Image (cartoon, rainbow, N blue to C red; front, side, top):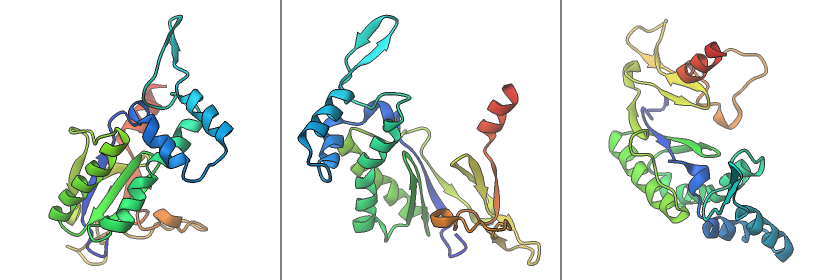
Length: 202
């Protein structure tokens, strides 16, 4: 972001785990898995239905809620977004994704809008769509706005050395370089408001 990517597409996929298209998901699995018995088992598991109140409801889309496999399957399905970004989205901005949570850091608002369009076009083939109310374009310049990602709130802060200049400074934490998310863990970041409120209610 210190390199000028001060516009962020803060994306929210509406009911991702409920709406993933089974055929689209299995098409991605079949790119790597050729064992027919395993594929049959996985498809049967996806269609097992939901047991609630003594009634089993069939499921045509989505992955079972609470299952340890659901985040993995969502990650497999959404790999098409990574591929689309590698092919068509790199000119727009940097995509950072963790399971169904992702943001795109862009140099201009126009490119952030284009990034939203590209992401929406990719997701529709998976039976998914961006949440119209929760997906937003955030302007970070001069600390004007911030965004929540992976449980933390990120915002540019004014330099204590050069007043009037806003940066995301490297976090001073021994042995931590941020890994693939290192460029996010620089500067003003705090725990998001929602998990703090939830913690205080316990």
